[in-house]
Image (cartoon, rainbow, N blue to C red; front, top):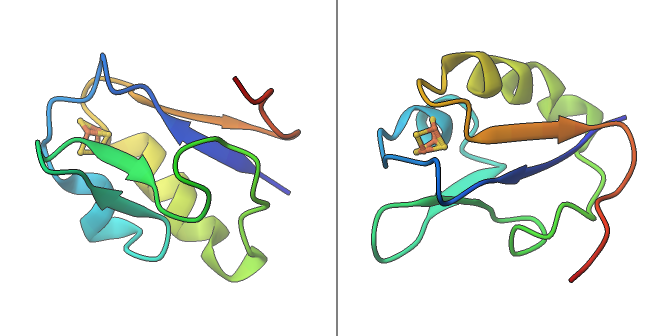
Length: 76
Ligand code: F3S
């Protein structure tokens, strides 16, 4: 299983991730992406159904702003 979050310092609002994985990524008012499943905390397990989209989005991001982990991220 996977967990994901977007590093907003790296995101350039290119829009690829939300196009490829609309069930996982959405954009804030500045057009920066975040994980909509858990407010970008990286603590919600990505449903298996969306895993292919997740990998596609990660690979498509031009700035490598999308990170994936096998375990939940630590909350801040
Ligand atoms: Fe940003 Fe990368 Fe998505 S630049 S909008 S996180 S594909």
